Length: 224
Figure 1 (tube, rainbow, N blue to C red):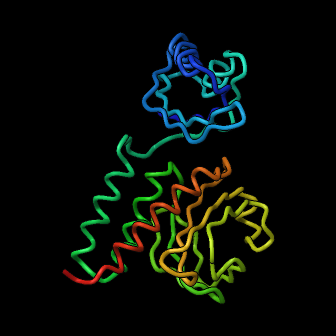
Figure 2: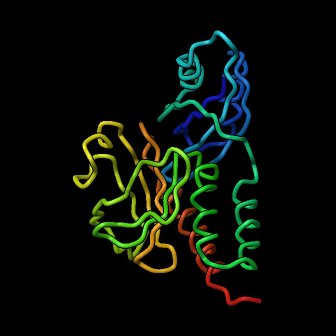
C-alpha cells in the first residue's frame, strides 16, 4: 500500500539520502519526493512510499524519525495516480481549453485535476457569497450548496484552517484543512481541501495562485 509522508527535515546536504537509506533499510520503497518549501534551516518534503504487505504504517514514522532532526508532520494513505509532471500536464490541458470556450471548461478542469497536483482530497470552484454557488466540484468534495462563506468575495489567496467558526461542526470534527485563491475576479474562487490535515503550507498556496492565474488568463482569451 502507498502512503504520503510529510517530513520536516534539517536543510543540509545529504539529509534526503539519509532518510532514503533509513526507509530502504526498513524495506520501504520511495516512489516520489516533492520539496514543498525551504527556509529557516529546515525543508518540508512530501514523500510517497510503498509499504510492504503486512507492515504497519507506524513503521514508516519509526524509520523516518530514526534520522536525527527529522520530524513526521503527517502520514496518510495515498491512493491517487502517481505523476511527476502533474503541473505541466494540467497547464497543457488548460492551454487546450483556450480553443474550446466557454470559460466553465477551465473551471471544471481545475476542480477535477488540482487534487492530483496537490495530493489533496478534493477541489471546488465557487461563485458568490450568500449563498455561494458551486460551479464545479471534484469527487469527494463536501457540499457547499447554500452555504454562506464570509471570506467571499476573495480579493487574495487565503489559508482556511480547520477551526474557523464559519465551518459546519461536522467539517471541524473532520479537521478539514482548506486553501482558496481567486479565479479571474473576487467573486469566483477555487478551494482545495483535505480531511485530517496536514494544514496547507504557504508554498502550496503560492502554487495554487500561479495555476489559477494561468487558468483564468486562458479561460478569458478571445476565440482564435
